[in-house]
Image (cartoon, helix red, strand yellow):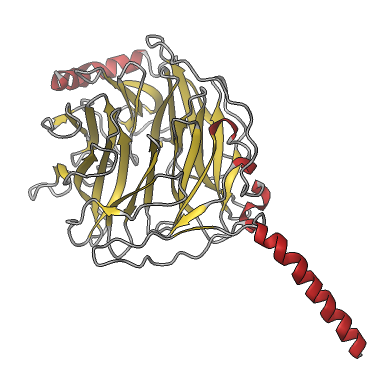
Length: 487
């Protein structure tokens, strides 16, 4: 049935698009990144239990060259004015980042310094996270992280990262049971990684039974162009205690070594079903495999989305309250962001959400490109779509309400809580009060893991400064008096 839907799309899609280029139910696109900023990162979105969607992205100010992590909230009607959550020192760049909200309504955030770590962690109450004073003092984990992913639930923070440039490339998992104060030693998911391979893109998703699911793709870093060639999957069905041996979703054959050159695998979970979609041909057409038993057995590979193809650094996947999976990807031709829905049996015929160009000859005519396509669901029935105009270009957001899905009830907002004792300084002085340390290589153990080294970053809000500063000023005054008396 999946193949039939894909074949049908080949014949019906062009006629449909000439009649209706873009679904009118969508609002946007609306620019979220700061006007004039061209170096914006991809969006990371997570919903809280109070009916709001939190969105984070990185951007670099063109005048000061400072890299910042931005935060905005959609309250059901509109986006709030963005605020700076973190500002790196000049010369440092925020790399990867991710966010998650736990069952108690606390928002957790991780990010990396550049493409080789370390990892920073901070948290805030989700209902008041737009105030920088509500965020905890960042904690640093000395890990050579390239990409990071975070899941919060069942009293545990689950952190996944890829090591791309370090001495032991691979995919690593660690967790915290006390809200990010202490972390377990990293567990290496793929110690059998081939020589000269490195994980380029990782995705991480929970299921409803405290299971964790991971998919990633390898690049061959010794070859020019770093082509991808292998997509793998692993899971833990007991909340991270035990992990499966990695399973091959797809691997490039000797007869067609370029079929996985840009796989960018996406991952989605609904009930016991686990779905992986990736660009699995030389023409970057989408392929799909799924499991109905939490990743223990898998279907055969099937081509989906008809003749549509193209890859723009990954697709967006999100689940609504009805358990359906929504796929968003930048495909062609016509070129645009397409939407397809998995209803438990098949993927629907793709429809266009946003038009980029009808033909290669026509061009965009002022319309935005769409890289880093990402998706999220709020209240079970509000779909959100984000993309960047070119890699690193301005960030845009779109949204719509699903009329055939009932919204989930939101929890009442809790009473205000006082700021934490070690609150970060205001965004304007964040880069000065919490300096970013120079990344240092991890000290590896014989098994490839490294010691658990977590520490709090010093800040001028630290009580130690309040005790040392008066004594230091008194000492300076005494020395000055002695100097004048000696004269």
